[in-house]
Image (cartoon, rainbow, N blue to C red; front, side, top):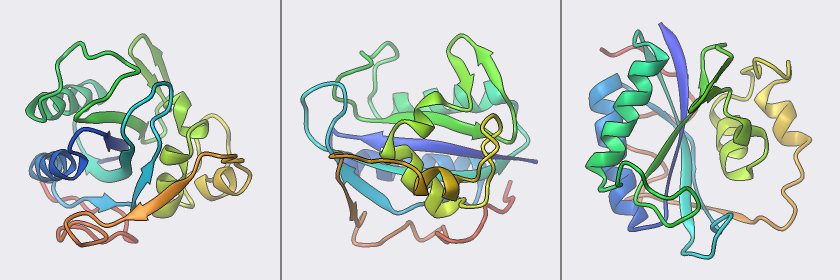
Length: 179
């Protein structure tokens, strides 16, 4: 089983679409580990604030199969298949880490380079997997976050559906297999 970490974010009806995406991820991959959710400003364009979080789970699927499943979930969240990169979106699901895989395939760069550049990816990743080592940098997520300069990019922890995490998850426990 491979542990996968996925960034999830939305700035179009984010509570609605994150709920849809998390239910679909739980149905596909069993129990999930969820980070706290954070509200932050859009990056790269002017738009409504995003709500972002990181999801962890175990899978026997290949990285290509996981990517395909994430694209199906994005489509179920009304995201067009060729949506603009720097624009509002109902759902954005990005593989941050797939075990210790390092891939430079076009469209499938893992670890995701944005992980160490964007506080809304790194902070939630460090929240749920502080001791996971970045496959190319050799540092833990905790070390990467502690040395990160978030600058003026503020993030505010928010509740989803009045709860810090979904009822099917334990925010401090590593993913367990459930398929």
